[in-house]
Amino acid sequence: MIREIVTIDEDLCDGCGLCVPSCEEGALRIVNGKATLVSDRLCDGLGACLGHCPRGAIRIQHREAEAFDEEAVAEHLKGTGAARTDSAPSPRLQVLSGDNGQSGSPAAGGCPGNRFARFDRRGTSSTGDSAAASAEATPPSSELQHWPVQLRLLSPEASVLQNANLLVAADCVPVAYGAFHSELLRDKAVVIACPKLDDTRGYVEKLAAMIGRNDLAKITVARMEVPCCAGILRMVLAARELAQSDVPVHEVLISIRGEVLARRPIPSGCGVKQ
Image (cartoon, rainbow, N blue to C red; front, side, top):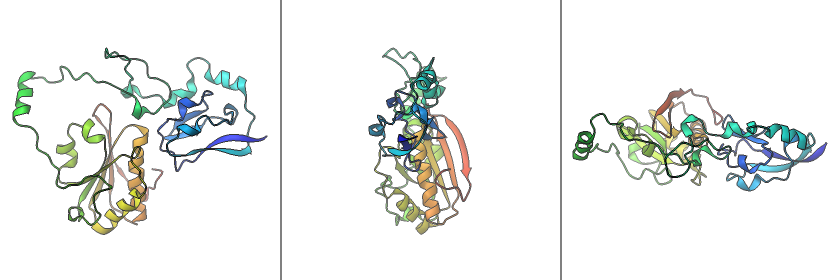
């Protein structure tokens, strides 16, 4: 039948997941970092999810689709509500309830990057107070070579970029990763950005200018594990393609607990969907 139904623009969707809990039928889930309509017959076409997408990736389309089936929805949501499980956080993203620091069950739906989590760091030092006192006496030095560091503010003509190893870091990485300065920033130029909260218009073009004008030796993309943060890698890959460059790109994936989850090279020719 021809009816109104939700459609999602994958190019605009950044996988934030804010649309998922707004669908009472559980018709949406995050698959491979993108919001996806599970089944036509689960979507009533009313568009309750539209106002929850910060990227405008969801719209109502008039097309041929299966009829909306309330019985199928009831079956789909029976038990634990499996339709929303994929958008719930991984074990690393446990949600904590109340102020007592006790773990609660991960809530279904919503953006994993928005979920509050608290980590017990007590007892992680083997030398106790003496280590803390030593750290205060000799604080680690900064490896920052230039200012500004915001992608919007640093000029593609900045001399520090010439032949540089460029670190493109998501805003949260320096806070989450304790060895950011010593392991990631050392001997690199750096720009930081947030693919979710920034107005990213012009970012791809600016990164392409940095790549095209400076004969960069390498780009390291450091991002958080949450799905929406993958946008910073997509911007770099799109910029590399726009600049028609083969500059090596490496990704470093950081967990919200500050662990390195992965380090991998991104082959030349990989585009925005990598």
